[in-house]
Length: 135
Image (cartoon, rainbow, N blue to C red; front, top):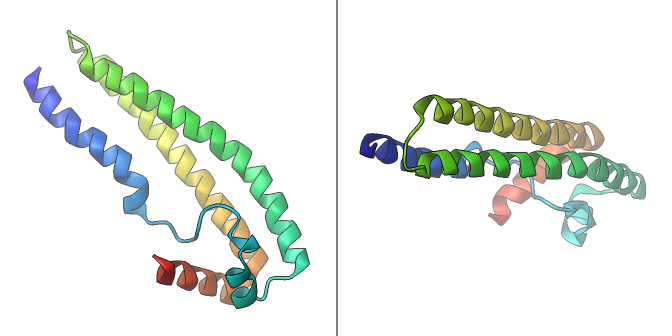
């Protein structure tokens, strides 16, 4: 049991930090409302409307997927903290957690791709550069 505990703790930390390790290519929230971004990217009112619509569409889904990840993480932690370790159940739950995280990451990527389509190559690269410089 101690062996599983020792393996489980770093795994939990790794899973919690995975989104940071993957790197975020653009700011979160409605960055297109920020005057600095508007000016630097030469955003139009048409861009603003498209980005608002896109944000609403994807944000709802991301909320659901984030909640799913949190639920699966909670279930995994419960199994790891149980008095009697059920290794098969832990492995099944870990698979569910990995699937939830993968789906969330894929949805975030789909959003970024749609932003890229709206902004075009040059403005998207400028956005990534602005975000990197603000870190």
